[in-house]
Image (cartoon, rainbow, N blue to C red; front, side, top):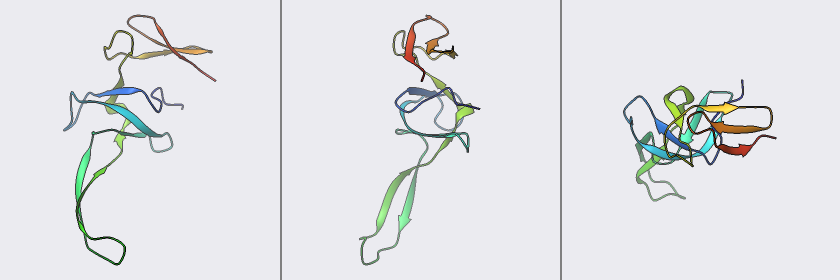
Length: 102
């Protein structure tokens, strides 16, 4: 199944520890049903120093399930489902066309 959310869309988290936060979708992993969203689902990793890396605490983005995300319409700026027709994607609330589908 093709995910409705694409790279570059703005997404709202509807459940989980980051509920209510918005971010830009950086990458979609359709085979796992996940997406990597900017500033969402960040964790801190403690890395040991080696020859190439000084070591320390870094923040890392982890994937979040697509079922926990809802697309935000760029026209009405409200979270809504996307209507997917044969040639375009549109907002279900305001019926504005978001982009063309290949």
